[in-house]
Amino acid sequence: MQTVENGGPVSRSMGFWRCWSLTVGVMIGSGILLLPSVLAPYGTISFLGWLVTGGGSVLIALTLGHLARRTTRAGGPYAYAHDAFGNVTGFLVAWGYWICVISATTAIAVAFAGYLEVFLPVLHDNPAAQALAALAVIWLFTAINIAGVSSASLTQLIMTLLKLVPLVAVIVLAVMLGDPGNLADFNPKGEPILAAIAATALLTMWAFAGLEAGTIPARDVIDPERTIPAAVVSGTAVTAVLYIAATGAVMLLVPAPDLAHSTSPFSDAVRGAGLWAPPLIAVGALISMAGALNGNILVSGQVPMAVAADGLAPRFLARRNARGGPQGALLLSSGLSSLFLVFNYSKGLVEAFTFLIAMSTLSLLVPLAVAELADIIHSWKRARSWALVAAAALAYTSFAIVGSGEEVIRWGAVLLAAGIPVFYLLRRQDDA
Image (cartoon, rainbow, N blue to C red; front, side, top):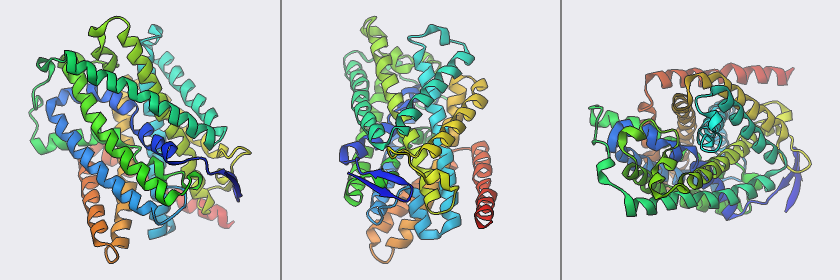
């Protein structure tokens, strides 16, 4: 069903499964596919990080679902913060979340280029070629999203269903061939237990970044007050189970020293199954990351569009084209993701990925914390049990922020603070 609003045509083409696939499809991407390598140096204590983030993410999903029942506005955390705290807070939440999304787009494209090495050996140890491949995939899915929310959400559904295949295949293979001797020590770095859990919580939280994605395009969702909560909560729970099982499977199949230096751990995990297995897993991994990239790009257009519709950003960002795609917002977001990619690729693939996920996760955690606070304030007198759920979610979010480390917090604070002059500059231009 298509309607016409101020910004252009709006197609309510997203039912439960498309909304669910946006939540699951954005979460299951480069996070799980590279995280076994990122977590390997921490040892098996990383599973405690998974348990913390899995439980905490379900609490966040419940809170977002509760917030989504109260509004049909697009923007997710931005809309909830704007309704509760006004223009300045709403804008800063949108600013931080937007930074998160465009950083995530870059990180996923980096990971995509890493797995593409399986088919294009010329990319190996070739930063320029890797960067070009990453840029190409960003702009391919930008074009699909410009074609409209309906085409983008259908693409998302198909890719989400396909991406579950390699995860299940690796889990089954580990049951048959896994060796517990491949597992690393519990805490090989010798860090204090809470510090190690906090560090792995930040890294594993990245894999759940996207659980809020299903709340963003509310204007394009059928019956959003019912559809969004069901899709977000169920999608998060299913994803948590898959993550823990798949990470354990890779660690059982790949020796810890090799895993720590792998740029395609899932492909390495299935090498014992025959020559055909790594390319098959690599295809599945590429589909998985492509789906996550498509979903992130969809969200990267929706957030500035929602802000602009409230008069807090340039009006051109609120406009949709004839097919309902927020073309101006998409071009701006993907352009900035491309710049992030070029500036960070000199760090090397795994180093660039690790830095980008840390920055992206912190930029997500702060907007989520504000949304959780909004639900606590709203629910405290009306539904005390929901306020307690939101308070537990806020406690977890704060714990993950602390685990991000001083450097990331410092840079994250700078990026968020940069939104203050941007807000007042845009307001001054609007008043003029």
